[in-house]
Image (cartoon, rainbow, N blue to C red; front, side):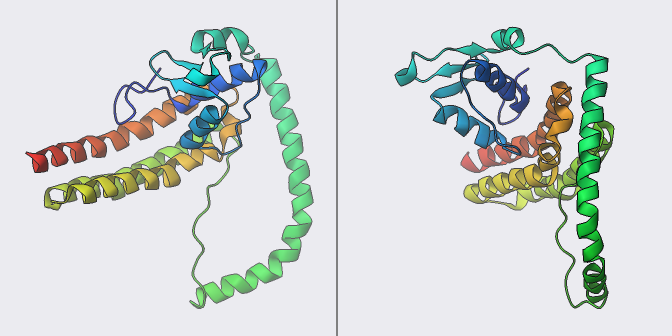
Length: 238
């Protein structure tokens, strides 16, 4: 279902847009690069002669591309393959595990050769000679592990960034500054929280509703800051 609150109220969610593109690909071809963000996906759709009609919940051709076919969510449900059975999921999971083991075996030799060098780096870091590198988005084996980590990151973002921003609003008198900080807050949230989902998007192949659910949780947290900032801007304009 489209977003019900926040800045993107009434717009299709990212998983819904992905679903439309998957259905479209059966007829034409729009390949979504791995790790593509919402903005990237929408730009890709437009580049291929379509636009996302959030009200109609469909991919529709632009005016100058009327010969193209309109793909709606209902049609997408009919065109896309049905969800995999428990046996098919188990088989697919086994294949992924085998491939992962092969990659780990291949990477083992490289890691072994790096042990000594890594030991030197750790020693230098303890002495304060070099700073600890910025954290990277981890990858998980199960959706349960991913969701647990995601919720911790989301709560940290709420407490350390969203609440702090809301508490500062009364002291901000520059509308442009409020808009800029609100935009920066969203970008930080997408990077520190939503990137966790995009880095593990393969886990959602059999459960895209879970992606939708977690995406909505992020939007719900951010929408509080968005609405409070909007109220402050209205106060300054009056």
